[in-house]
Length: 109
Image (cartoon, rainbow, N blue to C red; front, side, top):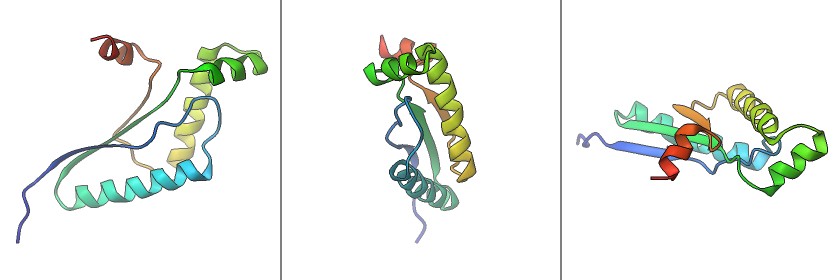
């Protein structure tokens, strides 16, 4: 029995932009990626998005400890996160940061 093609938007918990991805994070992303791939292979339009959560005191404090600006920390951690996800073949359709002009625009609507 054929099923109707669904449009599905999926995200995972946003990792905080103050440090490395840990095993608990990766477990969630792997499980979600498997589910998204299954949906796509089943003929559904499934979009998997995620972003670094780049707001909060922990980021400011970590940047101060490292002697860098929060913006540099956010950029460095995002690159590290993306490399980790790539290494585990996590296939986001879009990966971003909450520290973007696009996010600012939509959060102020």
